[in-house]
Length: 364
Image (cartoon, rainbow, N blue to C red; front, side):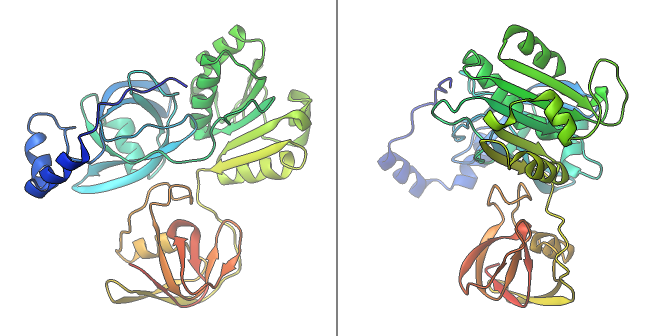
């Protein structure tokens, strides 16, 4: 991995002394008059390049300030922008490998009804400044050689896998890698030309771009199933597998591929939708504010709270970034990913993938 050079940190003693004399918000206010990315400690990034990747996706190249601590290929970060006077935060995958100049790239797919994705796709331009959070996620290259790989990507699930492909290519493709990439139409494929060029340049890299809603004589068609998998990848049992895409795609891949692969790791970018037949309502007590609310059982606590005008900090909305994590002091909750009901009296829960299974008390 390429090293990213960071400016030297201020000596801790000097920093403490300055902190006693200067309020960070005051410093940020005046420093922003010189450069909008200058802050006391808040990570910000300026958009320095913008390029269209497909009919509904755009790549934004960002130059973070000195407070952002870098990432590994395959990870995500939370991005925030002010829209109609309010901060909106969502999680996006980093689509490039780490670079020597410290710049990073996110590829944003426009989502129907998505406030931030529409803003970034339609209106964000070079020079705009965004709030950025620390990188997170475990779908990264292992430190040691792990043999042959299979990547399964659907829709915008290609984004973190593209960062991994680029890093693998920069290392000379040291292990065989096959990428199966599904999109609805050819116009929605991202990075297609680059992927095919990499496949031509590296004999151990194979790409299959598969269309699900468009017939094309030059590309396979259809959704992931056993016949398609066996026809395109004959040695799944020798592969380690990463899968990323909508939850339904990921669950299909898990059921089909995980039992036969050497290892399987997946990330879904849509919230869980399992129906656990939880009916009725539950009382949620917010300890810090003293409020008491009634919410539907089985609905994610994050969505239930937002529906009542409460806006907890959130990011990925899929249980990875922990931005929405808070303490629970009493009651039972259901994990929407696994279906498990958790009754520990004092525990942490992630609001985006937890639902009230009864009356609960949480630290909000």
